[in-house]
Image 1 (cartoon, rainbow, N blue to C red):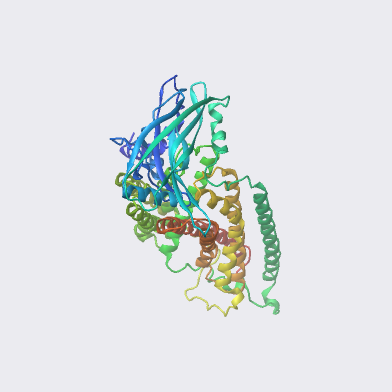
Image 2 (spheres, rainbow, N blue to C red):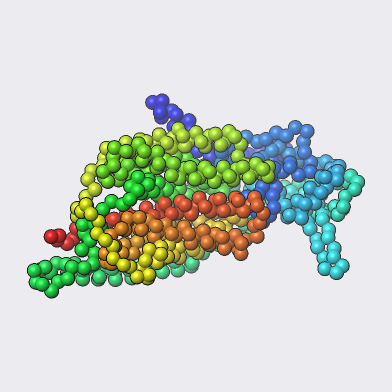
Length: 588
């Protein structure tokens, strides 16, 4: 085994262990200790604004011991620590005292502010999350106005078990104690809890269904096959309509261009007349190739993630598994970006600058991602949120990119430039480009971007709502079959629309189609950003500077990824079409 192989396996170890806390089923004997971990608290309406549970004035042990977390759990904002709750398997408890809080003025103000912001807490038992509210806010009529802040003092735990395994866990709260509006003296609040064990016939393998049945956060995700079928039918009709019309038009063009030019009544116009310019390489070749390389990488990465999801690798009990898979798959698929970029770059006659092309390709997505990620992490540190990643995790992710992603990009670049042949253009480009005639507004680049972005967006708009409604409501997304269908639909619609727009552009004798094909489909990202903004301000209850930074920085990088991926699909579809039509006619 080579040193390089050992090095890669060392960094892949966290990826292979991303679900280690949930793979092995824990088994208990009677009166065995059942560990309850406290995790995080945060405003109910801001899914990414989370803080450590012990940041609130609650019952805290003398020495806080944290649980060993996987990389996925750290990326997911989990910070589990041991609690003071003493639970034993099958042992019921009634009104057992946890501690007595002696809250001072500042602690009372902090607790009241948290309850007014609808803070919830999250505990974890046997990898099952237990959630409820820290307290309750009661506000009465305007005249006279009443304002009561209640903190819950009694926690009732109910566990269902089958033989020696825990099947489900739930916590309810009661016995509210009113907090003073203007605290002056210290306040003592006793904290108690009860435990009840209930036998069930549900098997351990089916406990996921019981977990899904209990919803603490808003239930927004439903089986929406009807909406998906509607999108599939519309996409099929759109693709069929464009394909039939385009085939009839192109067939007429072939017949017209095949007529004898010496007959005297055949006018040279349309896309044939620019045959000596249509394969002229675009400006900024290096950037162009880097965009296609990274776009190909993101497409491969998305495909692999969907396949892994369909294979059942991303269970809801594997915290942050998708995040871990995305990080390591991005590094491993860097070889694809290097290969595609350098291969095309050499075909354009710039192979001697392949090293610069590799550098640009490697940084094109990674640098904006790390910049936005750095902004997110800095704001999270300012707010002392659990979303702030520790230095060791940040260093690990940087090393994964630096010692795996970048070398694989170089390796792919070497393979790409060595495997590059001729560009295989049916027509040779002249030295002097042909002047592009005047274009009416309805055939301008702006209309191309509008149509090229809106149609693919319309194919994913329904699924986009469900994805947003789950990811930004803390619910795990599980309908990967529907997501896979939507992925195929948007790729087909993007390719079809791009071919049609490229044909219309060539038909008016505009030969600069290279960049426009990328931006036409890439403009879908603009529609996604506009929809995301609409969702944030009108469909969600998220608010505050911290949550706004978290939301829009994630949306920015997501839209950028859509731009690169869909732009790549559009270009290669258009290139295939352009080669076909110009290779099917005779040139003078």
